[in-house]
Length: 222
Image 1 (tube, rainbow, N blue to C red):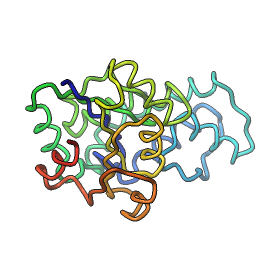
Image 2: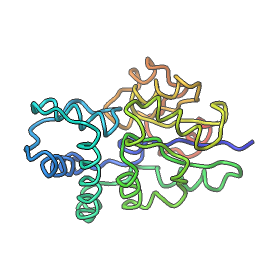
Image 3: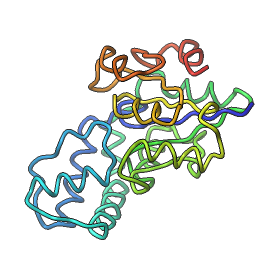
């Protein structure tokens, strides 16, 4: 039986330690001409929603074309400042080992289901050497849909898998709920801002404190 693992990125595999927000602010100002003073709480949001809600907080009404220009600017600024991302951010403990261990398991594929736009997702994982085993074409990204549950549906379709053959790894209640909406097994990791209790309450099948115990993670993934 072929199975697929859907990985979230921020606070699940990596931590940009504030660089991501700074680069988003640069792209936001380039596109809107307005300095970004604040953002909504972004945990579990897709990039398209983050942009729209951030613009609204600054009194701006935006459309799809504005988001597409923002996405292009966001990818550009990540390319331009990848050295800073590498210096200040880091892969979370255990992430590389788990990705490698899964790659050695027959009939398991790995991809990304993330609110990041695909170019930024690729840059982030490549920066920390976590991209080698990711099949990008099977995933779903922040430009594909506004809602995380829809990203899961898109990824299942692209991967050609029923929900029973997939498992989602995420650090937010929104991610947990997105997987459960489509009957996907969810392993939550308390490596972000959400507590184990919050992730359990959201309905995660398994909650782990982190990815450091490779065997425990593989067991949780089933």
